[in-house]
Image (tube, rainbow, N blue to C red; front, side, top):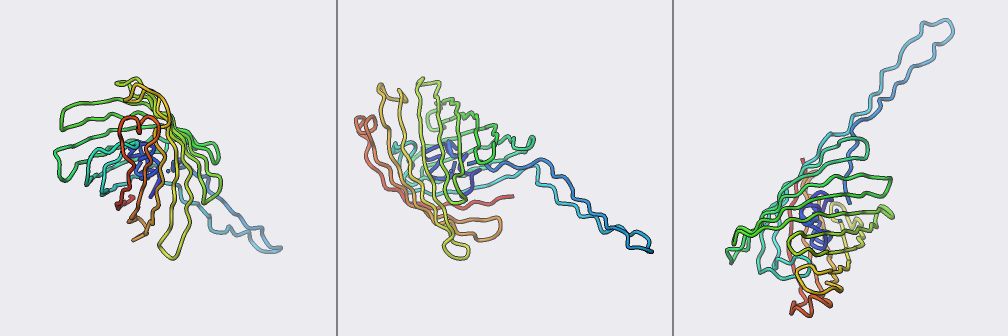
Length: 271
């Protein structure tokens, strides 16, 4: 699953679903270069011959923006270790715009509904991201609207992603919720490799910490693990079946939340 869709569901569901909004929302960020210098080549004239210029070689400029549309099904709507109900269907649309070399702006929307419930949720999110070699940092904002009861929430976040190798990355994020005046902190590691042809394997493991985030307590929130098999259907479309587990710790365990095992699949298309 791509980084942009990860940003569509924040971290935990963020890193895990790569599905990013909160995610999103493996927040690893695709930073698009705004411009490329063309390469010019001119031949040397042979003795006694008129000089001849070789064809000019111009490197194609990188696109100024990239967008992604994603549709997802999960057997349980789990967000930051909390069970919100069964049979989640969601759709997300996000766009990333190159502002300068290594600097980009992303924005999008995520809409979700429970199949057997009247619960609906809309998230609107934006972030500005800056890359420093293999390190990418981002500053973002997410607006949550819960259509089933009309409630809303506002959140700001600071995220970072570091590519250790082509196959291994580390991600981290700090989220502040204005309604509860609490913090949610999360870190995760992802390993990805190609199995055969269009099929790849991804494993993400992480740990989160809760500071007065919808509970009157502080402590470890949950640990999570996701295993996924992204299948490249075309150059722009990817189908990803996955299974994810969440282990309730400290504050969630005290709040009565259960450990969860979730199965699902997502389809993403880039354009």
